[in-house]
Figure 1 (cartoon, rainbow, N blue to C red):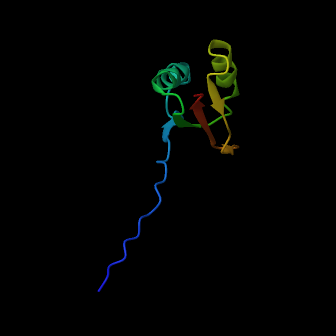
Figure 2: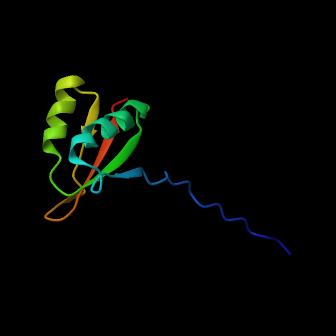
Length: 88
């Protein structure tokens, strides 16, 4: 009798999500920047927000041109989900 071994292909873990919707507006960018600072090249986390975080994108690009890549997984009207990846 032989046993067959099936190996599942490894999949990348889902990126961490940072839900800033319940945080005070004045402190959101600082918390997001702290998370950005901890990202290693190729690392990603997803921001969950109650409005378009485009001003954060502009601020990030001004401070660290080309360091982070943004996408929109969901763009409102009640929830924005935006993965941010540190360029490698």
